[in-house]
Image 1 (tube, rainbow, N blue to C red):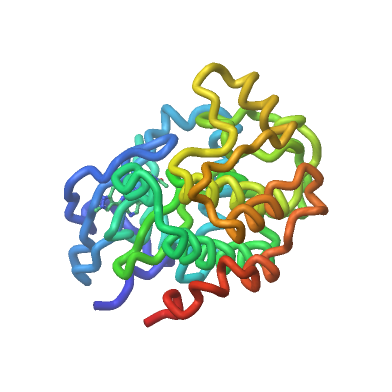
Image 2: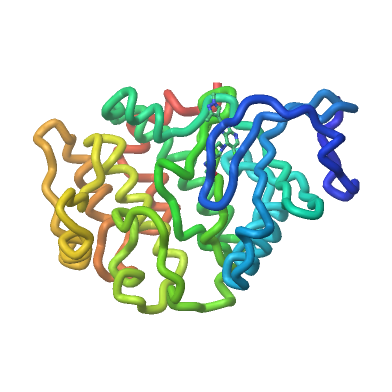
Length: 278
Ligand SMILES: CC(=O)NC[C@@H]1CCN(c2c(Cl)cnc3[nH]c(-c4cn(C)nc4C)nc23)C1
């Protein structure tokens, strides 16, 4: 069955709608089947009256433009989009193993070999993104999905930007601060190394079961701990894992270990034989 073609003018009648898969920031996502090809996709539905602010509309256009231009096994595909009088529809790749976040909640924390596998896949996706001069800026378990073979897929490009548009973060981020690097907390200019910081936070959370700067108390406390890079490690964390996390969670963005060196790090090399695509 041929994959849905982006250039076609789709309408909702081209699809059979299945169960609700969940909801992203601004809309609901449904399992759907394209009638003519039988192809299974995820259909993200956004209501136009909710996309009334210019900022949200601009962000949506950016998400669609960026994500539809990307082709990488660890990045969720956006095949196309269409609209009717009241709604906008995004035709997205269906990730059959759901959200990484769910798996992390279920398993509490991952073995270091599993965390190393996900970091390898994420680093390869980020290398591709940064080569295309795209910063994701919102790498966290909620935005990571799992494909048929358990491979990680970055989704939700709502906060991504093309780096030639250097912008400090004006609009406040909805959701957790846990993953924000100091420079974004401080509203300074940020570049692709913002994603390196988030990779470090994710690696810590996968191995330890919670993010390094999480503070149930309040966001000021979380921000203080981020800008002070105030981290402590449970004793089950290996020295290689501590070393890689510490090399990613550097206050100065220029001091963060580059992605190519992440892929050569002892923690990653140690499990490489497990992660070679079977
Ligand atoms: C990043 C993001 O937008 N997350 C919110 C949306 C929730 C469902 N979305 C899915 C999207 Cl956009 C694509 N594929 C998915 N697969 C699933 C899923 C599969 N299982 C077994 N359980 C679930 C859940 N969900 C999706 C994304």
